[in-house]
Amino acid sequence: MTSDIAAILAIDGIATGAVYALVAIGTVLIFTVTRVIFIPFGDIAAFTALTLAALDAKRFPGTGALVVILACLATLIEIVSLLRNGERRLVPRALFFYLALPLAVVGLAWLTMRAEPPLAIRLVLALMLITPISPLLDRIVFRPIADGTVLLLLTVSVALHFALVGLGLLFFGPEGVRTEPLTSLSTEFAGVLISGQTMLIVIAALVFSGLLYLFFDFTLVGKSLRATAVNRTGSRLMGIRPARAGTIAYLLGSLMAGVSGILIAPVNTIFYDSGFLLGLKAFVGAIVGGMTSYPGAAIGAVGVGILESFASFESSALKDVIVFSLLIPILIWRSLASLHSEEEIEE
Image (cartoon, rainbow, N blue to C red; front, side, top):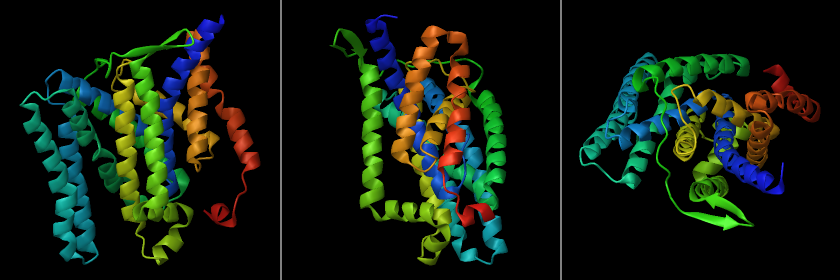
């Protein structure tokens, strides 16, 4: 391996790691607020890439039908819950948030597609269609068991992943897709050619990380999410609703998954089941941060991307084995380094 090859592999690894970083940060965000290890995070990213590919082909994506089905289920579950608790006055609000808004998004996307919009509008449409999925899944699947153990939530999350894979095959088909690069620009640095897509991926990761920092430190909603992550009981006593905080976390997570899918679609062929490996590799990075630290998760994810890049050069067939083998020493290290509180032990 020459220095030029090493530089190329490092740049490619940083770009891939930047995508993993977005997924890892979103995974940590959802986990800290809701205690759910959201395994389908990678599936949401893959669905975004498939959605954008369908829009590029001037076809209305299956994401619209998926959102409609999930919205109807979530609305039915919410209304039944409200009626059981004697809160009929909140039914119109539930109809607005769980049914009217998602259907309005799908309708707007359908009407816009008839005008053959440019790329920028198609990107916005893909994000609009994908963003409601995670909050709707939260209402259907996780909120009824929100007080369950972390192990139960993890088991349900794994089951949900397999369900989404089946739905992905149904709504998107078995064909793989790869979208056009978002930019054709390129530059040369230290004798190494860097594509504009690579620079865009890294810049997007940095921008979103910075926006998250500003959101959590300088907005009331962000501080409410942080309070819920630190102490759910205490935040509830202060008037913060964990269910609402969870919905916001899923919205942000879904948006980050959508951005990840858009960024990775031009450089990787995406299938309906490609999200699992994407989410799992990001999960390895998230574990580096102990599932609580955003900077730690981002650094770990970039490290995973660089390791995968060099591993694919040495042995393409064993690159995934090398990456996932990191789980063992990382889990041992986190177990020995972490301090377990009495509250965690009781759970």
